[in-house]
Image (cartoon, rainbow, N blue to C red; front, top):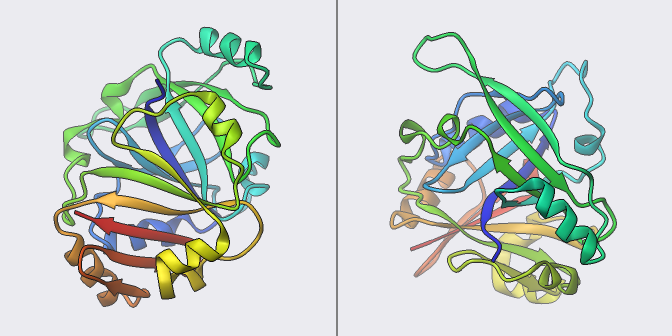
Length: 258
């Protein structure tokens, strides 16, 4: 059974603006992290998973090819694992091409104390096997440095991520990976059906072949999320049981539902 660890939005060299945008929408955005791989990030943390805003330093001095070559917007689907070596072997036996486990870290500052390293081990599926985005697996070696209570409460009431919406993506490789735990799902659309489902906001999502396109967020204050977006000058549409918010700068669509 696959368990969601996090979804990734690629902000490239525009992470400052992404941080501001998500704070305007009412999310608590954890302080910036600096990976030993060269990338930077912010996490929007829920009880047992999170949304990651990943990018590169705006001065361009550090370039992580994986980020530069990936599309702007939603582009990462990450599952939780406990045994990277076993995961690597299982993937290879199933016919997937995976990279060997890789451990990296980022320093975390807590309450003015000297920084401590949040450490992770990942197993990545090589590009070209899955339409739409990057798929990989993550073991948290120091989960207490990521899933912290001060980052898990959000002014907009967000309680978690419930869906990733994919356009013109072949589902078979994803299905072959295994069943996903209840509470989160992958939703597959043709472009025409996606446009019909998301209406006017769909126009802000670029048509560039198979892609990850929208993320559904659970919150009892879904209407407030839409109102915050309107106040921030973002395209937002508040309907009877959901609020749709487009982030044109990041080629991303957010759906807030109860």
